[in-house]
Image 1 (tube, rainbow, N blue to C red):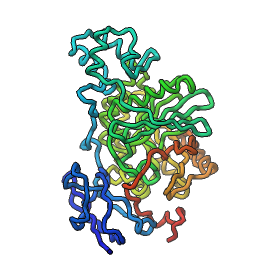
Image 2 (cartoon, rainbow, N blue to C red):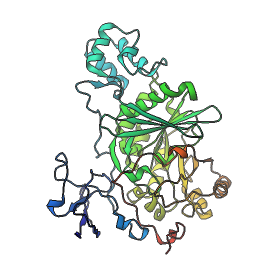
Image 3 (cartoon, helix red, strand yellow):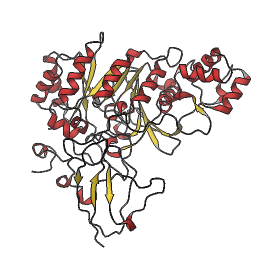
Image 4 (cartoon, rainbow, N blue to C red):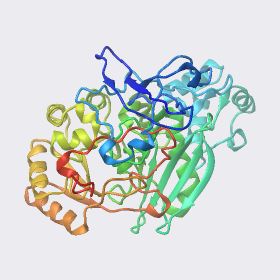
Length: 482
């Protein structure tokens, strides 16, 4: 039986409706429906007898994966300039996952933590002792039995009203270069990934996640293909760092820096002794990321220096401004293109926040920060953004912004259209930037044989964000013909 379907984009936040139509032919009488994707959401119009959604979803919009008939480059979905992107403030924020009637302690900053302890009739000093056992003193406690030296009544109260653990260890995979990918199960059955990257100079990098998946749909990023499942709580973010110290400090050495990075920027040795954010766009989960960073820098706990805590974004400008106003931590911006045309394609968030707006915002905001440098991340894609002209444009784009530039080798993955720039091309690109007065680093792949490298975290699954139409001038570079 041949059935046709029309997909219409959901109207959100007062944006004018936009219709997109695709023909889908199949011998099957049903088409699978998927949970909602917050960035690419569509309403499905099809005969009622073909729709079968769990009752918990109710009448709502659903996401789609690109049908098999549209898998070729010529059939890829092309979205318009005014596509509606999440701004990070309106999405669903999971402050606390259900833990019965218990409070998840690692989701509280120290002020909240102390207030909660006092509300149960115990002294502030006991709150500090507990805090140190969760985050300091090389204890990193995960259960009540590990809370040595605490009052018996205090421990009894904790066993009845508090939960110490936010994650469950699922597996650890080790790559040939010593990189480890840690899989954690969440309470709702979803899985996140944390990557520990040893450096040959005795320094260690840990990539942690801020979301399950990602809504930004960057075209070169594996995680972007899976869409956003949900934000992580502050507790789930913090516990990745705690777990990394607990499990691997003895093997890989101490972790002294924290870097909240987008998934495709998570490998390499520039950020030595650091924690980096793996899956997700940190500023899309701004509330929980700021809170997690606050917990990590507390002097009585994990005690990271705020200047050694870096948070990355693909370019969510309102959240970027908020971060610069509220936080003393460092900022990294994933740039990856020197023109709006290319960035609109490979990083669709640029359709909402253009390069000029992003960079001008940085120029204005950095004026009020002392001795502050932005780190620009630039993933090198062969034939797309690695030309001599791109290098010269990049020099002009970052003028007036105190910064460093990090050139990143692209990590190929299943279904990727892109190829990494050659080492020779990266060196040529770096030399042009250096001659133009830029401070430049180069970063190459680590852990790619266990899919633990930049842009390789997560599993897209059956529900995927759409690939965007390739601009004509780049079709030859991607071997797509003309």
